[in-house]
Image (cartoon, rainbow, N blue to C red; front, side):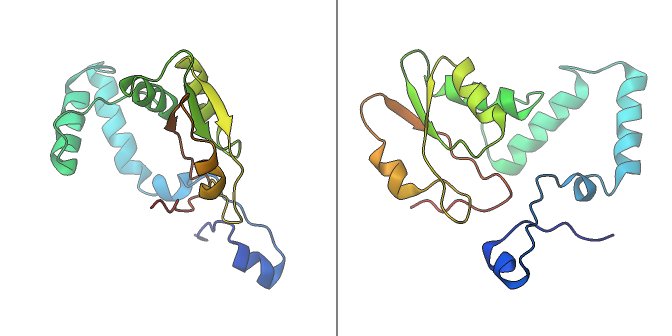
Length: 156
């Protein structure tokens, strides 16, 4: 199986080919038979939501991460929304983010009642921290960074 590559500026300069991979599903589900076997067990029990498997998952994740509490959710949009609400983000608040992100980032901000404030990206496709710093003022309550494409965001 050919490994998927992310677009990197240095790669592009070498071969003038633009490779952007926004999905790692092939690697993520490379052991799909084991995954399907576990899904089959859950289906046979009819224990789809808030059941034994969810409890096991949350306890295991808490143990592995050292977290006191873990709440699993159905998707990343819900996770972002709940994180914003846990921080007290709501009406009349502004959240700094980049427009170069998946729609869920902006959707979660708006659903929380806040207004997204867009900051441009740098050549590595991450939010430009210099422009980001200039956006902080009283209404900005949070910064929702997006690392679309797998490029690590460097924060200091």
